[in-house]
Length: 358
Image 1: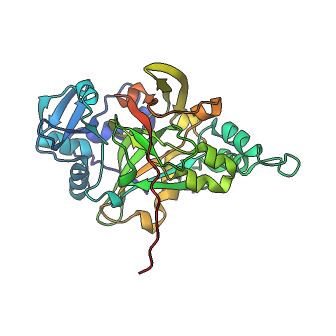
Image 2: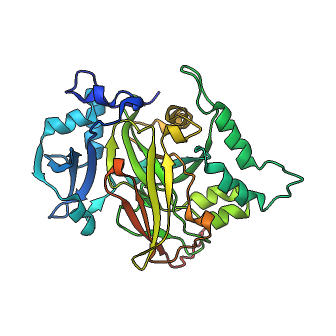
C-alpha cells in the first residue's frame, strides 16, 4: 500500500488531502526547487498564489525524508520550518533557475518508470501505429488493443481487490532527467524525439520499505515513436530517453479530472497544440491499482529511493504527423499544477561506444 505523507494530528494537512473526490475548490501546497542567488539549491512553497522560500530547506528530498521519519505530512514539515522571502516563480523560470521539483543526492537512486494504455483514449493511436505492421486477417486485435481492453475490464477493482496489471516500462534514473526549462536531448541514433504529456506520481521510500506519495507533477515522458512503431518489442528501447517533470510538485491527491494543453512551438509560434486529459475520470485504471503493480516488487521499495512514475497519455503530436526539430519547444500546461513545463528539443552528437576486455 502506498501511504500519502500525512498525520491527522499534523496541523490541518490531513483533512484537505484525504480523498481525491474532495479536492474541488481546495487550496493545495505546491513545492519547487530552484537555484538561489548564490547558485545553491533552495525550496519554495506556494499556497494561495503566494510563493515563499522554505526556511532552512535544502531540498524536497530532505523534507520528504523528515516527514516520513516523523510521521508528519509534507506540508506540516514545510509550515514548521517557516516561510521566508517571497519568490517570483515566473522570473525563476525565465532565468533558467528552476530545478526538477524533487531529486536524489545520488541520481542513480531516482527511478523513472511509467505505464501505458491507461487512459480512455490511449489505445486508438497505439493500435493504429502497430496495426500498420500486422495483417488484419492474422491479428484482428493488436496486443495494444488487447491490453487496453484488459484495463477497461479490470483496471478499476473494487476496494480490497487487486486489478489487472498495466503495461509497464523502465525509462531511466536521475541522470536522465532534464530540469524544467532545459533542453531534452535525444541520442544521435534516435529516429524520433516526441513529447508525451503525462502526470507523474512522486514517491519516497521510507526506512521500512513503505512507499510514501509526495504528490504529482506535470511530466514530459519523451519517447522515440518511430522506433516503437517498427515493432512493439522495441517499446523498451524507445523509452530509454531523457524526460522532464515539474516545475511544481502538487502536494496531495491527484484531481479526478485533469484537463490541460500540450503544444509544440517552432521559432516562437505554435506549430501544433491539442488538449490532454488525465485523472481517474479519464483513465481505465485507478492510481491505486497502478501504484500497487509498481511497488509490489521489492526492488522498488529500497529505503531512501525516489520514484517518478509516469501514468500515461492519450495525446501526442506524433500521431498527427508532427516531426520535431532541434530548437522546437514542448510546452505542457494544466492550471491545477502551476507553471507550465517547457523544454526545447535537442539532439546529441554521435558518441561511439567501445567495449573493452579486462
